[in-house]
Amino acid sequence: MDVDLCTKITLQPLERYQKIDAAIIFSDILTPLPSLGYDVEYGGGIRISDFSLDDVDDWTKFSARKHAPWAADGLKSVGEEVGESTARLGFVGSPWTICMYLLSGGTGDKDFHNARAKVYSNPEKAKNMFLKMGEIVGDLLADQVIHGGADAVQIFDTWAGLLSPEIYQEFAKPATAKTIEVFREKVESKVPIIHYAKGSGHLHSDIRSLDLDAISLDWRDDLAANREKFGDKYAFQGNLDPSLLHGSTEMAKLATRKVLNAAGNKPGHIFNLGHGFAPSARIECVETVLREIVGE
Image 1 (cartoon, rainbow, N blue to C red):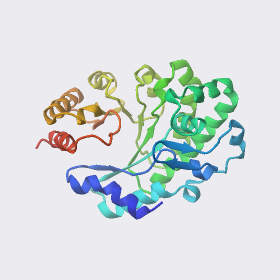
Image 2: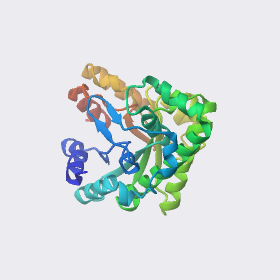
Image 3: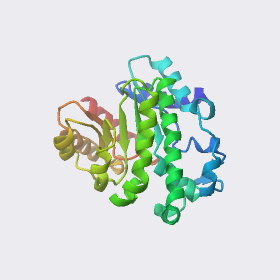
């Protein structure tokens, strides 16, 4: 990985919009896979070389510093550029989400039907895979604090929302808990952890039982209700519908104001989208949202 290029891309929003107060490192959720022996190719989708559940016991003993230092190195470089004035955020994909892509050989398995069938047909081997991936991403996340100097970190469990509460409790949640456990053991200070899972409103009671500091909500979640019920314990991030960046600037402005009103004036809200940007988002809408947030 080119650390200079990673740094440049991460800093671009801060250079363009001076009032942004945090930068998340430009990286990828599939970062651990090459060190485990899998080729990952991008362009027209994601392609990952063949994987079998029997591979897991032969996985390399993972060390982020040795095998995948790029995110932490990038964060350190960003810190050298911005100093203490801007928060730096690290992130990883969750064990469940990374393993969905690994089991599928990349993208193309809609809703991961075949990947989930493999999990349900081989539950013990699958649990072994998820827990080992939990250890790996916990170490990867810790390195972004210990070496990279991240002020907070985020776990992206993008595909957890596909699961029923029962299946989430059996397969995905223990692996995420392992990630957090490894991270907390390795990082001496109390660094905040943010958790995101798309379409996961039915799982929030389980998610809240994890050792988290902030929960990122997607656009379908009721931000005001979450703030009212749980705002004393958690910060909340979100939750503008990304599709609103594809239309009129007036629509984007009104929607942003609605999110800010739902969040209220108390501390503990991080404005963000309810999911990621799409390439076709209009830059005029992005700029409108940012001006509305800072009150320009």
